[in-house]
Image 1: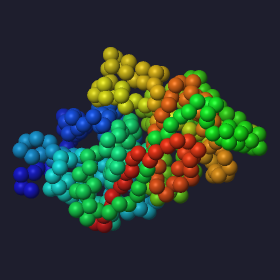
Image 2 (image 1 turned 135 degrees about the vertical axis):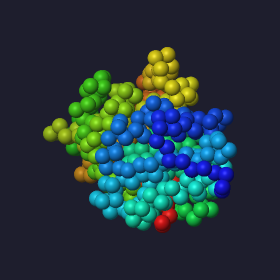
Image 3 (image 1 turned 120 degrees about the vertical axis):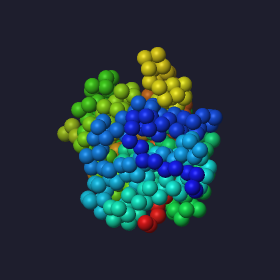
Image 4 (image 1 turned 30 degrees about the vertical axis):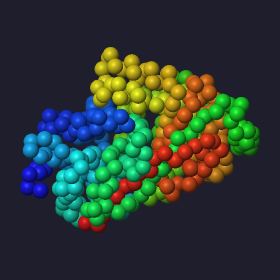
Length: 376
């Protein structure tokens, strides 16, 4: 291991090297979808990302013979540690060549931060919070990652297992085929109307992004209420909501946001779907310019593939068929937009309530991923 140098990074150039390392590592891999370099740099920047109000992070690069061969982030989410009472240090932005010594030395930096702060375990790959990319890919290496999921080579899990790490949480992802509305499940259509009438609900359709803004805070509140019993839950902070509004609203096509309100005008369910940006991001290769932004615009409005990102349902309305309304409306939209395939966001394997949503449609489980943990 003597020929491997681990360095904590501090300069702008080093952070750029940190972000661009996967571009070199996966340049010949047809399934790796590059992130936007600018977005990655802003996420890591303590002056730009408000998550640092309640988080500590250190970033490391591994060098061998002068070449970068790995990277890692060591993160402590203090909300998780102090309020949720989970005594752990997180690792994320983990990418390495196929050399277990590099993996060990990088992970050692994270363990050291955990021990320094008297934490009990290490877990990853994750980001600063629940809203960041998470989970090491275990199956589906021949599939593209989406804009908000990680991609990694098969040897990553082998490294972690040899180093004594065990699986902590498992996620699954599905690909769903969309038929024309007439051929879609009849019981979904009938049940949708029945539920709307029974609970006196109203479906909101949006034409402009500005129309969505009054409901965004309620969406995040519903996310907390929907997922607060899952093992990975950490409360979403107000400053995170503002940050995500700024970062992701620009990618939103209002047609793909569906909200349901009750008779008092309170939001009780929402879903966020986006056209697939994988092909556009590949063409852009990490760079957002005036000229290549056209790829994003084309993907937003001319696409046969979409990604199901988020769904939230108020606890009082869970298991009452509310999602049938959402699916019925999304079916109409997908047919109108000529969307034939939808990919789900990673769902915790234990979250069977969400997975039951796909049973009425032709679907396949095409990716599995997991986070790994170890006592320190």
